[in-house]
Image (cartoon, rainbow, N blue to C red):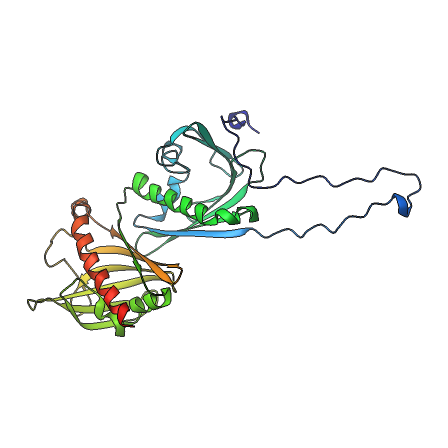
Length: 349
């Protein structure tokens, strides 16, 4: 190992999630082997396949910016393996195939150490590396794929976990989710609006309420009525709808669908529209972003459904981005009313 990447032990030994392999018993050599000298062994257990953990996120910026953030030593310490309250101590990177990296963060009295190797670096589409929290441990492999989209890009991270990590799979998933959130906010400057609600309904029923245009009468803030709803449910398809406010005003809107993962995730770009399906400005806020990236996730919770809405402006000017950030409270009020209507709709079934 290069001296620049020689292991430096922390103040606390990291937990080893992989059991150490024990050497097989050996038979003392004999000049004339016989049955009584032979020691039988049970067949070696078959190697267990790794557990594939996948985390995805859409970003509003180009794929190149997202890819470069993974290899930028000046910024990596602010988000990769960084935790709230932690203090980054050491970041060393040799960003090339077979190059090494070391990232060490102080967490309370202990050091969280990450020793890794880059295997594939293909800008801007694919990054493969492996890492362990102890240089003597067997590393686990991580593949990051970044796909350019019509709006921004989609990142998919696949972590090949040791079967010994099965019990902490959800914790690892939450950790990678937090890391991607930090990348978006601290490095790429994205400020999402997020709101969640648990519905007392199975996930399939909640999913259908979002993907069946015959059920979309719940869509929109309190007080409006939907008098036109046409949904073409496919990537690239459009949901085109019209709402009428209590005072008689009519507003059109549309989604352009980017991704459909039944019944887990629905991703689309939303905008105000006109009767012909064109994009129009917000009728009451001239500096509102023309387009908003919308990610809706559906998580099952023992027969109930945790629904999370994530909004992020795309192709926004500086003024539009500031308007979006300043409008989080009004968005919360609007979405609260919309999700109330969804709850009432689900209660009818």
